[in-house]
Image (cartoon, rainbow, N blue to C red; front, top):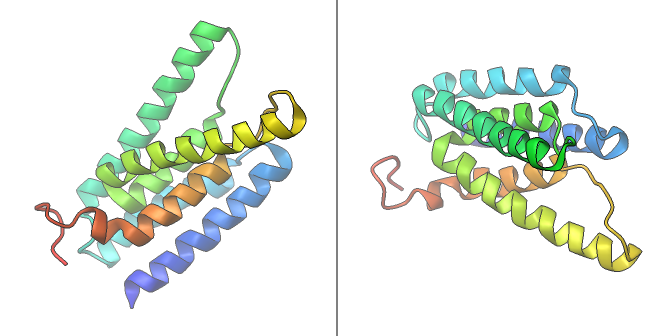
Length: 159
């Protein structure tokens, strides 16, 4: 029951952040930071899927990985490739799905974004910048729903 309620909260929140990101190319702190705290709190209220420690680890790993990628891109290309809102959003997602889930989310969101970039490039015959938040949100929803199955066979969760 609680897992379903948590899923509804997460999915609705991610839908809202995606809508804002698509319209403005900006993810405000007022939407991302509370989602981090709600995710951390949720692991205390609904133990079992991930521990509070794993939620903190997921948030830190997600943020630091995207921060590192963005920093490397800006050093190599001399321009920004990702905003801080995306980093805070992946930290929030990490708080909900833990360290393993956040890594799967980043990989899956990269594939989703790549597919979208290819479609846009083919349709427009040129590269077009687009919001990364919806790709993160879509991947996060998939990972959250499949999370127990992704971890099956590990010491973390037993079905």
